[in-house]
Image (cartoon, rainbow, N blue to C red; front, side):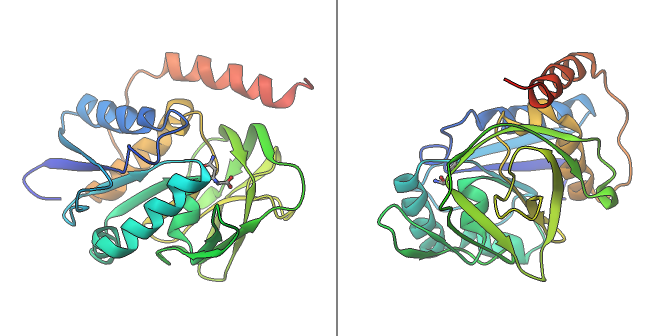
Length: 242
Ligand code: GLN
């Protein structure tokens, strides 16, 4: 990170923000500011080049057609791939997660290449759409409390050997392949099916991204009562039968 400014890039809000994903940008921004960091947030529309010098990139969920358009434009632009090569932290949700993989099935029923930044492949699930509250245990190596979120996807995602499961579901579907995994990550690239938006429910994920960007092991604590109340409410929703 340069000049103690955290450069936060929100990728394609015009195409991939169907599910309140702006909340993720707001939470990362706020939690960085609470630690005294200067934050420069750039919202990059899909007709603009993706800057390559960001520290943290967020990419959200979307419906099938906008997802294809986003994949086409990101491939053509190349900025997000270069940012990943520079070691930027990338956090993606649902359609964004599928786009970061090798390929997914697009709205025309065809195989659409992704960016290949995560070793995952998505296909169309043949079962019911995965919709509902989720509770999952995040990979213990990441040192985070249980993940809560809301999923809404038809695609399912298989992990290759280069990707680790981000979490393992206790309730809900996650990657939807029946292997109990939810999301994926490599060193600096993360993907999840959790909407919610996921950072509002799991603010320590925002802290993890900030720590990775700053290359520090800890951040000063902040007051988390409100987040915790929301977390408990959603954990109850995920674990109680409808
Ligand atoms: N269109 C994708 C699917 O249904 C992603 C949906 C989403 O982002 N919620 O799998």
